Length: 385
Image (cartoon, rainbow, N blue to C red; front, side, top):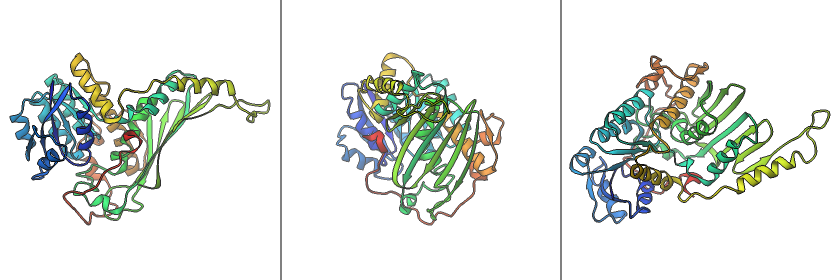
């Protein structure tokens, strides 16, 4: 049985705790840590983890406990030092998204993983969703043909008080706005579905949150060899919507699930009824999808547990986390410098380095409030359902 520790006991940690509790034969949570005095103890009591120990210092937990696996569920700016410390202590790590604010920090984490020989996984729980698995399977069948265009909507809504939490709303502690902290899931899915783009153009603004330095809205264009993708990252979207629309040469497929397949009349205009045969074939492929045994965080943590038992890499590793950060970095660089950014970003590029974003990013506004914690549940979107 694996002994598990959790660093960071804020809202997102509940997803980790609840996921681990679904594997009573494989893991037990033995310790929780949070730098806010008493917060780990409160989480221990909330979840009824009577045999677990609570720490106000993650370093003390790593030193005192014989851990096999640790979940890191802390603000993005802390992911790199905590991950490196855990790996150097000989503990396998699953770290929340985003992996880190910079590519340089991602490299430090990957280097620590290589030195330690331990497992490193970055949370991308949306890959463990039935609708996404179905979309991926149909796309991989190649029946829609070469992808020509994709539209990705990561559109959320957050009120002003959302940015009152101490680490949110600044480039230094949060690392960015919704492009980094909300759209990271859809950026990961874009890379998983379509691969790395060749170049990125983008613009961003702060449209509605005067208590945050960071953007609350960005729009990016991703260039592929013979296609384009557009991504909207927003926390100003009334009636939250997350959507992926993939146009192929022969048909369109979407999440939420939808199919369209056109065929042409002699004059090139769409024929009535379209390509009903292909549409039916795509619907049949979608219907063949076998539901995942576990979804969301439980699905990904289940894969990590299985990977440790089987001695294999996890399905989502540190390199996958880094690729998502590269795309985020390209979007910010393109928006700030008003130019197209080619990929990959080279290690000698200033945008690769830690601190460049903080130095160059505009302060749309200044943070006007800071609270140590916020009560209330959080919504993880469709991935939690």
